[in-house]
Image 1: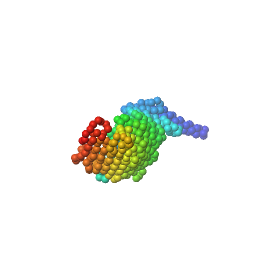
Image 2: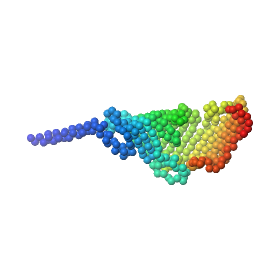
Image 3: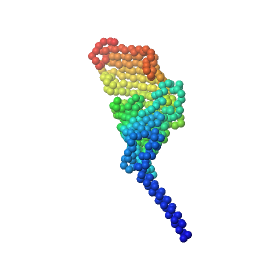
Image 4: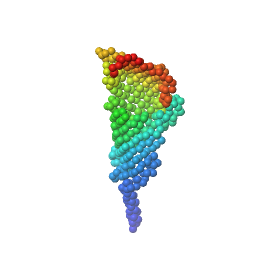
Amino acid sequence: MEGMPRVRAGRGWWAVVLGLLLFLALVWLGAPVWFPWLLKPLARRAGLAYASYERAGYSHFTLGQAVYTNQTTRVSAAEVELPLPTTWAWRRWSGNANQNQIAVRHWRLEPLASPASSNVTPPSAAVNPTPADSTAGLVSEALAQLLKITDWFPSGTLAEGETQVAGITLEATQLLWRDRDLRGLIAIPAQNQTATITGQLRSAGADLRLTSKTARLDAEFRISTNRAGLSLSSLSQIWGNPVEIAARFGPHDVWPETATLKADRFRLPATALGWPGYADLAGSVMARWTNGELAVSVDATAAPLPGREPLPELAFRLQARGDTNEVFIPSAKLSAPGFSFELSRDVELHLRAPWLREPARLVVTADLAAQPWLPLTGHV
C-alpha cells in the first residue's frame, strides 16, 4: 500500500509529459492555421505590409503585394514565398538549413532618401552626418542586413526586379544566392546593355565582379568596412583597357575623403568610333577627388594612318576642376578632320539649373574639304 502514491505520482508525470508532447504536436501541425493570425501584427511592427496570405503546400506560404519600408528604402514585391516557422526550425535543427529558401518575384527597390543626392554643398561646408546617415554607415547597415538574411535564409531567389541608379532603370532578371555566394543577370534596357554579376559577402565587406559582353566590361570591386570608414577599390577592363578606381570614406562622410580614377593608357578602336583613315584613339584619363576638390585631366589623340590621304591629327584635351556645386573648365579643345572646337577659358558649369550663369564662347573653325564624310568644300 505504501507504493501506491508513488505509482500514481509517476502516472501524473507521464500525463504531463504526454500532454506537453500532444500540445507541441498540435502547435507544430497546426502552424498553417495559427501562423497567419500571428504574422500580421508582427509584420506590421517590422514595417512589412501585404495584401494577401496563401498557403503553398504544408511547408511554405506566399505573401501577395508585399511592401517593406524603413527610413531610407521601400521594397515592393508581387509575391514573396517563405517557409513556415516550423519548417524553417526543423530544417535548421536537422542540418538542412540550406533548404530554407526565400523567393521574391516581380520586385522593385526604391530609395526614399539619399544623402549624397540631397546634399549639394561642399563636404567641408556641410554639417557632419551621424554615422548611420554617412555613406560608410549606410553601406555597413546594408551589408549587415544582407548577412542577416543569408543567415536566416541561406539560399534565395530574386526574380524580375528593378531599381533606379542615378536616374537609370536597372533590371535584375534573376539574382541568386547560396550561403554567401551571389550570382545574377542584370540589364539596362534603355542602353541595350546586359551583364552578369557574381560575388561573395564577407563579415566586413563584399567582393563583386561585373561582366558585360555588350559593354565590353569586366570589373572587379572590393568593398571593406571598419571603424575607420569605408574603402572601395576596383580594377576593370573596359574595351580591353585597364581602369583603376579607389575611394575612401570616413565614418561620418557622405562624400569620399579621397577618390581616384586612372586610365594611364587607353585605346579605342577607330572602327568602333567610325573614323576611317585613322589609327586607334589613344590617351589617358586621370580624375582625383581630395577633401571636396575635383581635378580632371583628359588627353587623347588619333593619328592618320600612313599611306592614306593627308588628314589632320584628331585630338581631345580637357582640364577641369570643381567641387559638389560647380565645375571650372580652364581649357577644352577638340580637333577632328576638317573641324576644330575650342572652349573659352575658365568656363564655370553649375550642377543645378541654370547650368551656365555667365557667357561662354565656343570657337569653331571648319575646312569642309578636309572632312571625309560629305562632298563639301569651303571654310567656316
